[in-house]
Length: 348
Ligand code: FES
Ligand SMILES: [Fe+2]
Image (cartoon, rainbow, N blue to C red; front, side):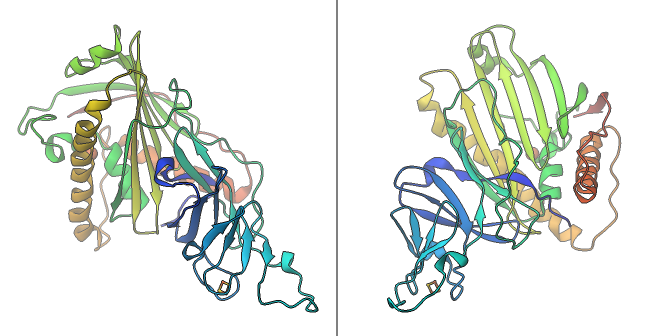
């Protein structure tokens, strides 16, 4: 399984990282420490001290640098260069600045911290010329009203395909408040267009089950965009307000993934509803996580899979886009979206 690099991945919710604190993460199999300096800025470094391999998150943040907990070597959070080795005496000439920890590009956007994982492996050069960090439409700079993250015991491909799959709803998400068991599947017809390095379900009116959305005003419509590596944004809007749902998946390793779900909205005073909605979202996402755990027992035998039209067409698109992206990266060519506009018809 190849993981896509040269991409931004969502690492964690910004408010989970207080000033002066660091957290350890594994992202695409790489050990990363993410921290927030006293001035509020975030940074990400390889979580291994180049002296004797101690994970840096055990250390402390000191004047904008990270001090390793083992022998006190200190590293700048702006370039990863070593700035202090306490054991050196005045007459010992040692070029501190030659010692360096890999620095990852790291940005905090609309309440989430994103880390750019490049293809340059263990190279210490920080990549430049980065693509923009994914941004949510219509909600300004505010962070999510609620967010949750869940580990899935599967590779990123299965996590993506599982979450975009339109026909599992009636089988997996059968909570009373969402989808009744044994309901007869209805015919769906949805119009998709290629978009960026992914595809978009074009803006359309929300029908049936849309009553709670009247709070957004009249003419409530929705649009869903999926882009590589695994960023899905649903933008529901009425003539007064918007709701935006972000699902971003980050591979922790080749075989485990972290699914982040964030909700943004522009309506004031829904604070009381947050815990309820967060709970419902946790149940919903938990159902997806549990089905993937069951599925893993079958996938362990590496069976050939049958993806059918049109129910699994989005899954096929995902694999095609990813393949194209990998080829373009390898050949140093700009990405050209291989998809065509299409209407997908299926029952769900
Ligand atoms: S291992 Fe970090 S300073 Fe020695
Ligand atoms: Fe699901």
